[in-house]
Image (cartoon, rainbow, N blue to C red; front, side, top):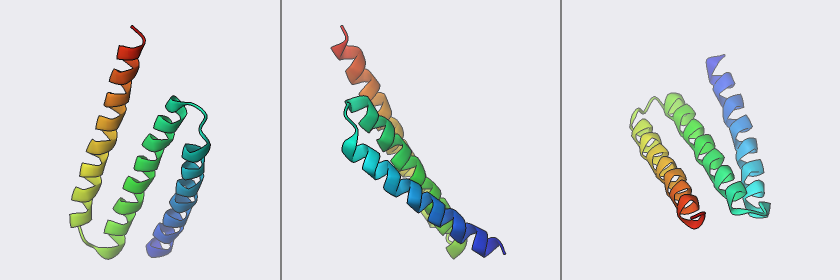
Amino acid sequence: MFHYTLMIAIAALSACLVMTAIRFAIGPTLPDRVTSFDLFVANVIGIIAIYAELTDNANYIDVAIILSLFGFLGSISFAYYLMKTSR
């Protein structure tokens, strides 16, 4: 039963990933695109975590941690860019 629940969760996150990619493509402003990029990274991290549980391979968790670090650095660099351009 748990296996089926994880498969449903991967399907739901995949659907959210497609919708986020569409939002990234049509986002009229840069903040819209950065927000959708953050959501895209969060969805991918969720998919990686679920896949790690399905395959019983904990090495994928390290990949998810590194990906979350890159997502965080992207958000911080965007905030820094907005702070510099508003002055």
